Length: 480
Image 1 (tube, rainbow, N blue to C red):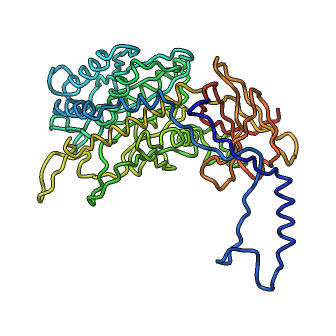
Image 2: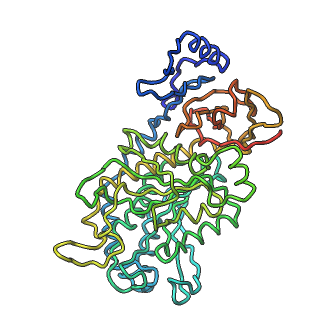
Image 3: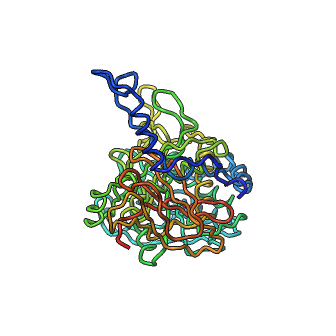
């Protein structure tokens, strides 16, 4: 298994052993009038649930991934951010046929940058006409620049990263004033360009799509079109992330969090149907959406010394009053999240470039932290590398509920990956934020655990021959 082998820890007691031990302990503790077997503070403590398996551990980067992470270059990222700023404005409604200024010039430069990388990278311009809408006063051509690194083994499985290359100032309809957009979102576009460069000579087993989208500031139009096109094509998108405002580690009080990256991940799915909502209310699962499982996976593979970054998962779809391009994918039923910096200085976002009372306003490159952006790129790289080179998330995971039992039977469909080695059942107490225990069950499609489904949450994940794990699939109740 190499670098990705789970630590072998002592198997914990079975449910029945735990119940017996608890009974003995309770019998041995004398009860004093007015007292209870509680903590020093007088509060009853729930005893931990013991059960089958071992404590879960993080998936460590392989030697090949560590080499790729070291290849990320902050100087290249800085050069890309400054070049995008040099187009003056990248407003969606700005000029499209000027070779040096406006969104058209930026579009062509991004296309040329992707195309020049070569290797496994193919690039296209995905253009459409956006009809009149609240922030689009006349029919306007919007163009996404999409780079694809086709997978070598399971190309039908797709992972998506986006960033938006359009920019704005205080008045969202002002398309002539300078709108540098260094942090929002040249920083995200620079991450995509750097990942394409690093991965061009390092083939992935599954397909990676990098979308530099436009129209975000006017209403997410570019990502809506991109996601809808993929949906209509039947694309198997198993994970998506937006990189939006990932350029600075500074807060408005002058403090810094240079090694924290936020990842927003919704609980109740945006696309949830009434029937799915009824099931969720009946059995729980508000914290177990596919997007939250994806976020847990990111935390497991990309929060480490090799990326130099702590991933702070925020259990929310996005920030208050804001929304990014991952929402376009959530609306179409795909798991998705949004990477963004740990703090924000609003004087540097969506602002006319000006100085007031000695304070500089505007989204300028001097407010970016390019070493921070490089670490953001490493988080993205560790994430998509681990997803694309590992097995897909198990399909049709279900927990059998045909009869009342004190054990738990799970079933799932076997994947088709040629290097699939088997599966693991994971579980945690219902109050735990992340999976705590793992049971290696082998290359099977059913397992019965000696633990009650009424007391814990279960999941299933796949493992390949190299020790790569998939994100967890949260099972739905079923009778067979």
